[in-house]
Image (cartoon, rainbow, N blue to C red; front, side, top):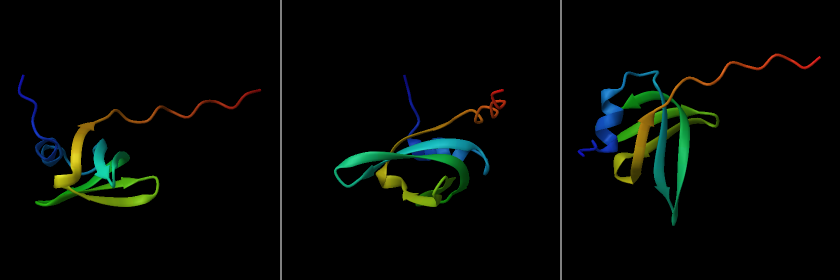
Length: 77
């Protein structure tokens, strides 16, 4: 099974697509979930809860498009 590298996945998506990107941070990993701002030649920028996050591709270990968030629930009565 041929799985494309994460950079190729991200470059193939349009700006505004909702994505999750896992990347190396120090001795571990972290994720950013949000909307794709730009998939440039050397890095990717995702607009997440804490603002824009730019990650160099060499740190990205996984990436995929994800569905839109669920609709807000109705208030309890």
